[in-house]
Image (cartoon, rainbow, N blue to C red; front, side, top):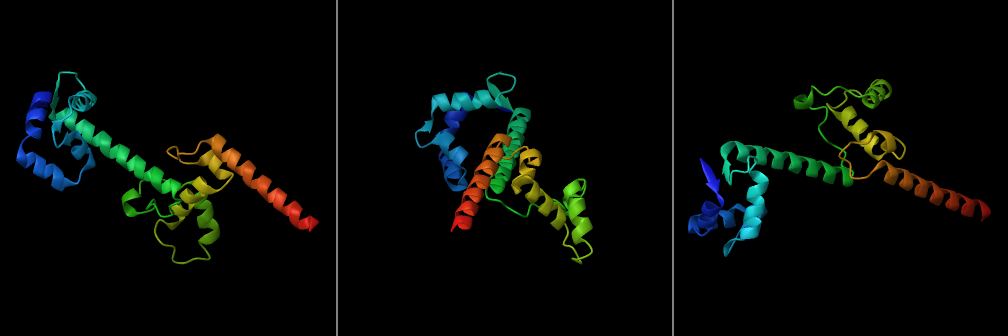
Length: 176
């Protein structure tokens, strides 16, 4: 089946649909289906964004592509939030992520920490390496995650500012 703009408008007036939208707590549905029905301009924009073949109706495959793209964007958004909050645990070494190859930094950590820390928790080294690659002042310039919100130039500027403050503080303390 398919759904068009007229069907979407008429369904928004159905009390069952309105009750479902209110109980779902889904902000996207609430914004799309407001109390007075669907705003025509917003509904048209949403339909055009989802309607890949521009037929004026959304079929099952177009809806599936839209929901998949929305889920991927949500995961990327959560990843960016985690990167901005300096999240440490990512589950990179977990069994479900076993196909990921251990990077050079995780192998280095395993070489130096492996003999000292036994048993090593599963995924600890991969997560430590990922955290280091994204937050070390120098490594982050060249090896940060592609989804990280800071650019290389911003990292370089931050490094310059941090070193400038350190230099000023060192000079002030040595002169005191």
